[in-house]
Picture 1: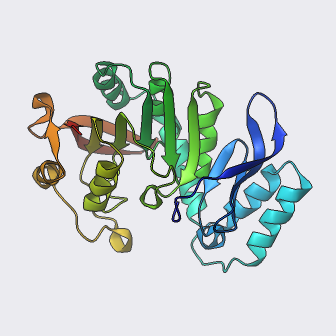
Picture 2 (picture 1 turned 90 degrees about the horizontal axis):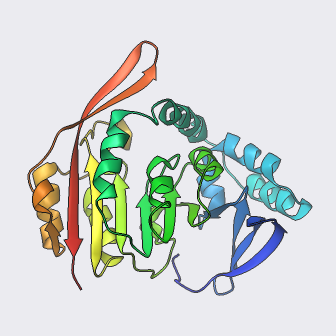
Length: 281
């Protein structure tokens, strides 16, 4: 997080793992709630909920203890609601990804990552419903999934291995502090996070390890579009500038089919590029 201080833990409900409680920053006097086993590492939760009003209601309903319900109620009382409710959009996309979880695209990605030797610490940014993170958890020792969709993370957590943890957080806010990783994945994230910032953030979190990236470079998002989109060649050049060496198999741009079924009448047909690269300390 911003101050990069160690967090302490206050547990309210626990079974085989922590169901509810707080991560506490004694330096900033901030509380980060853990609800339905999902830590919400958002520095300004009120602002985060301002365009996710229905998420606030869900967090209140999911809270098990009076203390947590009062905390969420207090946060919601300070939240200035907007007309947009991104949580409804996030929930819709959770359903879409569930519908497509057995697509050939994910089988292709799983094939590529199956070739990667076992690592100690792995993180996936944009983990969504956990299709890839949960697969990684079957092979690697410690796996973390980061996403901003509470709806998707709830699905991811349902079938996650014990060594796979999920967090709701903004990846650019360094939710896992100064932790270094042996393998970092970011699948189809360039249209959601400024590509150069994403690469720079990842570069700081890996000293001697691998990254696995993919994207269809679909930057047309209206007012939500990133300001500085990068194409497949520019991404590779940016990686070189950040001291990454691209694996020869993915040195040239690729076009992997990703047919994303939206409903019975609509499909999105993408051609996705993948990149495997290594950074040495």
